[in-house]
Amino acid sequence: MNYLFAPMEGITYAAFRSFHHDFFPGASEYFTPFIAPDSRGSFKQKYLKEMTDGIPSVPQLLVNQAGAFNATALKLYDLGFREINLNVGCPSGTVYAKHKGAGMLRDLDSLSRTLDAVFEQAERCGYRISVKTRMGDHSTAEFPEILAVYNRFPLSRLIIHARCRDDFYQGTPDVQGFWEAMKCSKSPVVYNGDIRSGADLNELMKMAVPEAVMIGRGAVANPALFRELTGGEKLRAEELQVFLDGLAEVWLTGGLSLPFTLERMKTLWIYMKDLFPEEEKKTRAILKSKSFGEYRAAVSELLREKDILT
Image 1 (cartoon, rainbow, N blue to C red):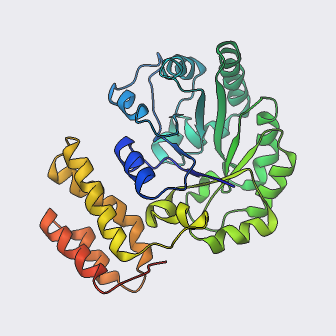
Image 2 (cartoon, one colour):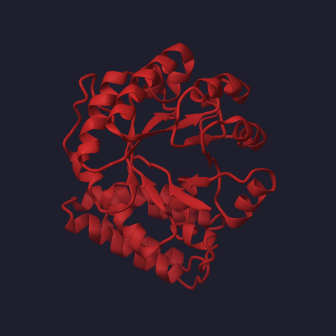
């Protein structure tokens, strides 16, 4: 089984990917937070730095036009990338309104035309195209029709978040629907959706054994999750403290300001607080900290006298 780290906006930037890859091995690839180029394929140059961290990474594009995808893909190809991922899954309201991300599922004819043009260039230039998708706009029952579009193209892999757009990240993923899709897909299939532990993975595999599993929120909440899933040790409080201190130092020495670094660390804790369901008061103190000193004190208070966390 291969494990992929999902793109997490605001978190899985290059410095995080590199530090996490060295500290907690187990993920075979990291998907980058999406690049959103304009209609000419132009995007902020900071994204180029994000693409060249030496970690096995796949760039993801958030577009609704083949021209923007193709222009950006050529730049990424020149940087050495041989797989480009199209985001057809982001449920954000602003993204959806622009017919990007999961908004592309509103018009399957347009999605098909976009993929036609994208694959024409990809096959000519020699790079692979993968897609990360939701299973529908309003219902996962829509997916057979959506899959018929994907099956027209030689996707390197189809990453399926087993929810519809309307679900956002709530409710239970449709594993039965995913299993049916996996049987019918002409492309290798990757599962995505609410894997937070080995027990969750075992439940999935009772019904479906995909080529790989992509994990985002679960791997941010428990940065040792990929290590655990590959047979390694469970997360310990002491090493979580070392990881967090080291990551903050990486961001600070990389040029981020102290306030910005504090906000990044607090963003991590939005997810990591799930490791401590009985410590709501202490995790709330972390999220409300106003200075780095307050933050460090609150984290130390939470982790004091704890051992194995998962």
